[in-house]
Length: 609
Image (cartoon, rainbow, N blue to C red):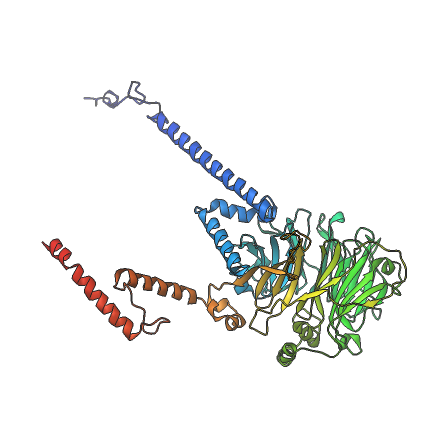
C-alpha cells in the first residue's frame, strides 16, 4: 500500500488565529515600544544633565576668565561631562580656595612636569587661564591653571594619542610655539630637529607637519592676515609657509661669503601691519638682519647690536617700538670680547628706512660689567664640563660655550609687553629675575634721531627666592592681561598677578602699605606616577615627591585613627616601614586589646549559645 501523505499530519505553515502572529514580528509589540521609550528617556536625561553642566561651566568660566566654548577647552569640557562624580570639581575648587586663604596661593601637582622635565616654552591662548607648555623632554600640554587641570597632552609618543612621527621619532625639545588661527584652534611648534608641526587643539590631532630646517628651528612667527607663518633656524634659512595651500611659498639664505653666511639665526619677528613685508632676524654674531619679502625674500641691510647673542624679538603693540633681548655673546661668532647683553629698544621706522643711526632709543644692560653672582659662578664649572663632554647638541650649530652661558641666565632670555595704568612695561627675564622696564606711554613721536640712554629697571622680582635648590632658574615667560606666567627648571610653573594700584582701598586718610610688584597666585609642581620617569634633580630638590611617600603617610594616619577608635590595630606596619611602632606604643596597644576583648566577652557567650 502506498504510504500516507505526510501533509495530513503536518501543521499548517501559516495558521491564523488569536494566538498566532505574523512571521518575523514579535508576539508582544509593546516590548519594542517600552524599549524605545526607555532609550528616549535616557537620551533626554543625558541631554538635560549635559545642558545643566555646560550652563554652570559657562557661568563659572566667565567669572574665572576663560571660555568654555573655545576649541582648546573642549577636551576639558568633555571630561567634565563624562565624569560621574561632579562633586570632584567642587572639592578641588574648595581646596584651592582654602589654600589661597591660608598661604595666599594655590598649589597643584600635575604629571607632565614630572615626566617632561623643565619648561622650555610657554604660549598663552585666548584667555587668562589657559596656556600651552612645552617641556624639555618633548611633550606639549595644555594647562588651565584656574581649574588646576591638564586639558590635553600630545607629542609624547603616546600610542593612544595623536599619530606623531609614526611612534618611532626621537623626542626632542620644542623651541618655539605660536597660535596659527585667530580662534586659537591651531598651534604651531618648531623643535630642535627642524620639524614644524601644526596641531589642532580640538582633538588634539596633528594637522600638518614638515621638516623645514636641517638644524634647530629658532624663530617662528605667524602672519594671520596672509594665513601663513615665517620660520628661521640655525641652518641660516628664512622660510615662508602658506597654511592654506600647505606648501612653502618662498625661502632664502645668505649668499656664500656674504653677510650672515654660516651664522646661525636665533630669533625672528615680523614688521606688523605698518611694515607687512619686513622680517627681522637675529644672528648669533650679535647682528639684526632685515629681509624684504615684497616679491622674493631678499636681504635688505644689517644692524649691529653688539657682541651679544639675540634671544628674542618683540614688536610693541604701538607698532613702532621693537624690543630685542640678548644674552652673553659668543666670541666664536662675535670675534670680540663678549658683552652681557640686556634689553634694546629700537625705532622700527628708522630700521625700515635702511638706516641704523639713531634707531636705538634705549638700552637696558644686564648687571654690571664684571659681576657674576655666586650662584652663577658655582654652576660654571659643572656646565663647562657637561658641554665639553657633549660638544654641540644634536641638531644645533650653537657652540657649547654659547649654550653654557644661556644656561647660566646671564643677560636677557625672554620679554613680554604689558600695560600698567597707561604705562607700557617690558617684563624681561634677565639675570634669573623678572625686571620691568618703563617704555613710556607708547604715544608715537616724530621720526627724529634718537639719543640712546641707559635706563634701569622700575622694579624686579626674584621668582626663585623661595626655592632651596640653587640650580632652579626661570627659563620661560608669558603674560596675559594682569597675569604673568613663569616656567622654571625645577620643574615648576608659577602664575603671578600684578596688583591694581589705583583701585580704592580703605578710607581716605588710610595709608596703604606698599604693595609687591607681583603676587603669587598659583604654583604647579610635578607629580610622579613612576620613580623611573622622574628626573633625579626633582627628587633631590623635593624628596617628598618620590612615589609612595604620600601614600605611606596617608596609610599611617589611617592606621592611627583606627587604633584610637577601636583600640586594636587592624594592620601592623612592617618593621622596615617608614612608620614603625615604638615599644611603648606596642604596650598600650596590648592593654587596649585586652580591655576590648574583656568588654566583648558576654556578647561572645551569647553568640556561642
